[in-house]
Image 1 (tube, one colour):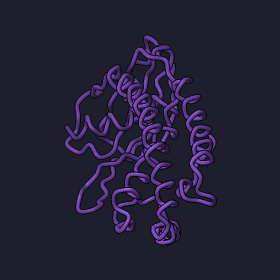
Image 2: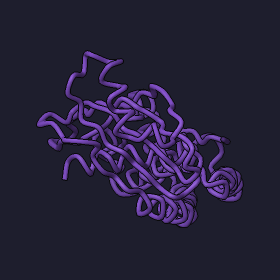
Image 3: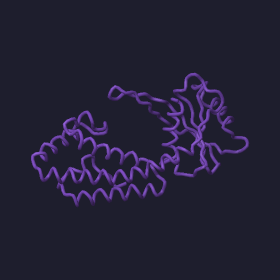
Image 4: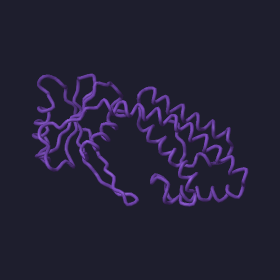
Length: 236
C-alpha cells in the first residue's frame, strides 16, 4: 500500500496541486483494496490520517493531547515547528488549510465506502456461545466459519482493558490455533471437546462461534470484524 507519512500534508513544499496528487494516489490504492473487499489495515490507516488532519486543524495548540498515540514525540515536535513556521505566513497557511479541507472531503468519501462495507459484513455475522458460558469470559476460543462451509478456524482470544484520557477501552488479542474440517463429525461442540483435551491450561473456557454466509478475505476483513464484534458481544 502506498503509505502517507504522519505529516504528509505539511512535509516539504506546501503546494495544493502537489499534495492533491499525493493524496489521490494514496486513495486510489486504498480503493483498490476496498474493491477486493479487503478492509484492513487500509480502513484503520485512512481513519488515522483523517483524525490527524482534524486534530491539526482544530486543536493546533494542543497537539500533544489531541493527536493519536501512534505519533511519536519527534512527530509531534515536528508538527509544532511546522505550524509555528507556517502561521507567520498568511499565504502559506491558507494553502495548507486548502490542502486539509480538500483532503478531509476526499478521505471522508473513502471512509464512508469502507465503513459501509464494514457494517454490511458486521450485520451478516452471527455470534453464539458454544455450550455453557462460564462466569469468566476474559479468555477462551473463537470459531470462525464463512460461507464456504468447509472449515472451522479456531482462535484463542484474550480480552484486554486499557485506559486513555480517563476512559476505559476493551481490546482483544487473538492467536490462530488450528483449522478443522467442518463436517457431520466436526461440529462446533465436538471441536470444543477436542480443545479441552488439547489445552488443559484452560479447563473451562468461554467458546463462541462466529458464522456468516459471506465469503470474504479472512485476514483482511472477516477476522478483524469478527474480533471487534466478539468484544461487543461479550461486553453486552
